[in-house]
Image (tube, rainbow, N blue to C red; front, side):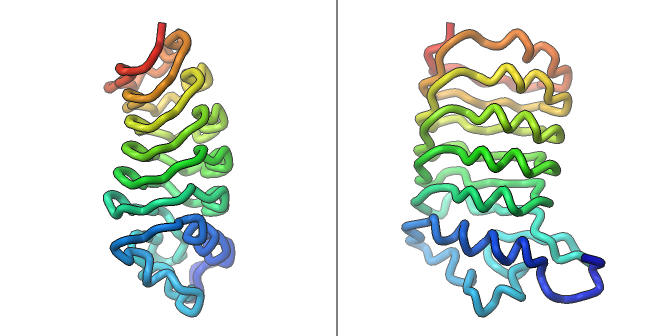
Length: 188
């Protein structure tokens, strides 16, 4: 898209309703502006931030809204996302591996939810990641050794989960890492 047209990008228009449909409870009606008949105005939807000019979605910021449901794999279709903050809600299910498609992703904050399953190793494909915040969930498995390839990573917060195994030696390659929070797991 060249940015000269006022219509939102079709890929974003398709991905966001699927994301909303996976949310089963919205007690504060925070997503009430997210309606199909206003999809041409998705940049004015609550919690959605767009890049000026292109009207492409670059951030989903919906913390502390009491949202329940799962995180739809359709989030991977929002290819220009650089920030996802769904912290302090009640999301359950797995972290969608489709996040690997978000090549511009810098901030991923899914902390303080009820997410389960393992941390997708595919997150290591998001080479611009600076913050990974997954603390206070029910995540299992090990810390992906692939995170050692994230040269821009400066915060890795994984505390208060059910992670097991060793702390990957590869994390020593993360020379920008300032905060490593991995306590309250079952790491050896």
